[in-house]
Length: 321
Image 1 (cartoon, rainbow, N blue to C red):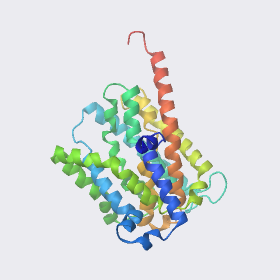
Image 2: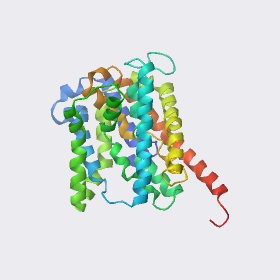
Image 3: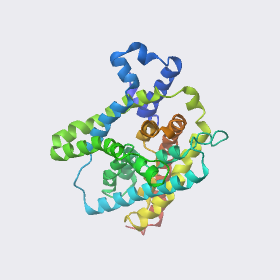
Image 4: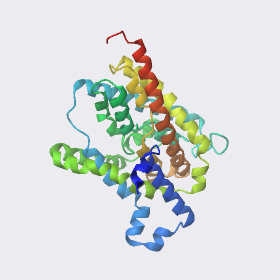
């Protein structure tokens, strides 16, 4: 059976299918973890420890060495994406209730959902699109985007926007596994290869555990609002990223469009933030479902827009260039 190949046909399938299965298990048998106990309980309810290992492995995959041009472009995209997410947080905090919108086509939209969907780029999607449509070496601009992984940037955005207050120890706790992995990966290339290979393997496990914190009714209610959130991510982050890449990053703008997606790992962010800041607990389940839908929408839309932009650039290019 080609299970892995089938899952990969679904945009973000290695993340979203286990997430859905976990939610189905939780909806059918909410006390399964407590009843089974032992290792099964750890697999069902261990989203935080599994993510801790994933962050360490992700940190190990970040290379210290990169060319100046790659660092420039990557830095511009990173700062633009985070800056847009911060601005959205500031504006949304003034108009949205703390628990999010309660009804209508924007049901579930909250500051937490908006920031979690916008501040983390799908690095794998970006790299593959730049390999196909970008200039030589542009795929390497993903080097700094790994810094977005985990809840740290979301914590910084929410904190600096005045939406939440986090104790300094929580910032340290959020970034420490990533820093340890980063140090180990750059001290020993063999450790980097070992840990980096585990990054994709751990995704279905933390997705399944995360799904066990959700109810299928919450996921079903995220349909239209989740699609709208995905469209909002592409438009609100994509336009500034396009111009930033063209004016500051030295690119054609295509890298900016390719970076206007929601990372699969962002699905875990609302639950992690809610664990550290109780005021987000009411908004976290809906935010998780909305971000999961945004992952699908942006994974479908961003490649199309990147390809259209590449064709437009090719038509405008002088003959023979």
